[in-house]
Length: 264
Length: 311
Image (cartoon, rainbow over all chains, first blue to last red):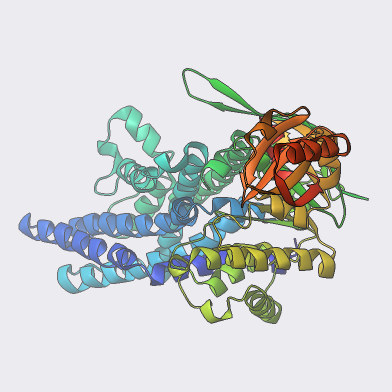
């Protein structure tokens, strides 16, 4: 495939997710209702507990991260789920495309929607609870967001692999997996508070390092020597691994007949 | 030159986690489809038709056998094959709130089409399948006939050399089905496309297909042109009478008569050898005092061959 054809195939999935998102009222809820509600709940709790501005920022970063990662990863999972729900999955895999076209295209839209969620939630946090998302500077924020989106990508590609392996019954993974990862990555707490073996698992999650690096700018010293580099290295390794898993799952679905079964 | 060369294709589906069950879908199917032909795959439900088509279209990986499609091996060179083929099925489905033009554009992009070329292809296909007026209607709001036409349009988006049609006229009104059959014949005539189709409608197979393979229980039981199949199966010939009075109950038990049915006021007797039996039957009808208003001798319908093979 030429580079142009590669880009066009990626754009096909991006455009389709955009079209679907623009026509689904529940997707508006995803980027408006839950993120806003989350920031309000956590923010009001910090007011009630009379937390310092640093601690408030710590918790709000966790909440905003949760919403951002959640929305971004859903878009990638949707790219497979739409086809599963509409029983049209075989048509996509009949075309000469790779799994990366599907995951990249939908990830682009996921990042766009994630950015909207972050901007909305951060603006609300700034306005109501004095949280300054740009306090660490544009580069630190961009790095943090890149880390969030990479984590979302890795999780969602793994979810897609699960769906291709187990069929529609794995669709709850699209909502459950990311929350599990977020809890482990320490969204509302440093990972030191986790029990030993769980903390060890948390250290294998890229988001742990990106949260750590971003929060360091809000007065919480970093627990790692090179968190950003570690986060990116882990993300790259997991991205490769999750794509291999998805490729293998699609191949398995072609062998077992699940690809056809999901289209009937 | 062959578009498809499949030899001893085997496919078994396994299900269950603890109690593994194995269902043999194909047990050594061999097929050769020449380029530019319309090839029919017939068989009862569960015969393995869709499994075979899916393997040939690279949607399924066979367990055994050799399959070459457009000169490439389906296991090793699937991506090369996918660029040059496409598929439409009678119960096709697409994203519920996407519109026909968007659906065609989406799949067109997956085949590398973009810009003006993509727009032109989408417009042409909408026109070809008489969908232009419905280009902005959500998929869910389309009738079955329009959904089927959209499936056919989608299958032409990459201008394939090889087209698989899995029961393309399933559930369509007769006039719509006839138009769709016309389109399929045009595709071969105008574009030299090789078409492999499955159908339950024998007249459709007889009308469209140059060659037919009959599959049952995962095996090819017979193959050839419709005429060859009729001769191969040797289910005899049909003598159709129009009588006055219109019934002769003894006909079914007469020597050489395999079965008799009354259809549209005509008595159709399938006989082992029409040349020998016709004079005998006419003589006896005369003796019984029946007046023969009309008599015709014809080959059996493909449907009768199907019934015989499916038995």
